[in-house]
Length: 279
Image 1 (cartoon, one colour):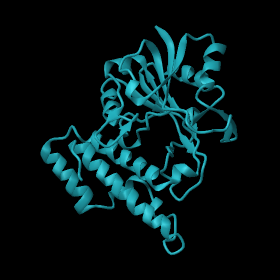
Image 2 (image 1 turned 120 degrees about the vertical axis):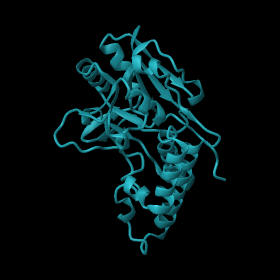
Image 3 (image 1 turned 90 degrees about the vertical axis):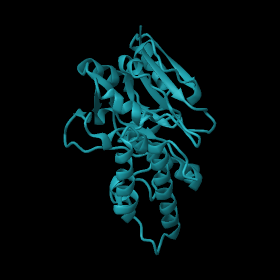
Image 4 (image 1 turned 60 degrees about the vertical axis):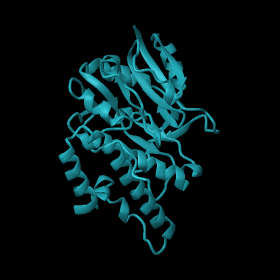
């Protein structure tokens, strides 16, 4: 069995910097992992794959999922191996993600950060609303094969994320979060175009709906009523206070984009939970 397998998802279609700085550390593209694997004498390989080509089995002890917009510290693999050696019950190892472009949506758009004081590692296995995106995650080979990881594919979209898989993993394994496993997300102005932005929030909603898809029919109806009729502000609670970051009078475009993002999230949630299209 190989020590590690790195999957770089997507097609490298745009120009990106050779490195960037995040948290006062120099960060490197996903392919930097090849240098580390060689330096540490690990057995493993790096594969560029499309979403459709991701296999649900691996012959590696650890699987790292990245893409070309995810930048990592120079010793990321070393950190991954160290944490894996310490936490043998881990199914997922994850950490913060910081976007490189400020926007009105910076508190939620490709941003992932949990606050646990000075804790170096935190067990978030039971914190369902705190689970990460699969991009940037490290999955144990045992968990990957046991629960047959696969991307999410619907009639409307494809995504590397799979909240149903994360929920399944927690039956036997732990999900650990550490600030030491942080990544940077390279964004440019084209990533803030309304179609790209709204697709992102659709996927967030779809993943939340997918996590609720195992509920009974009556429980699903109760959930729909709570979210869309009784407490429609639940979306704002999911993305804490980002609704209040801009003044509508001075930034009308943001208000319009916010409305669309909320609608796409809600459509995604409905379709993810019920498995059918709204429109």
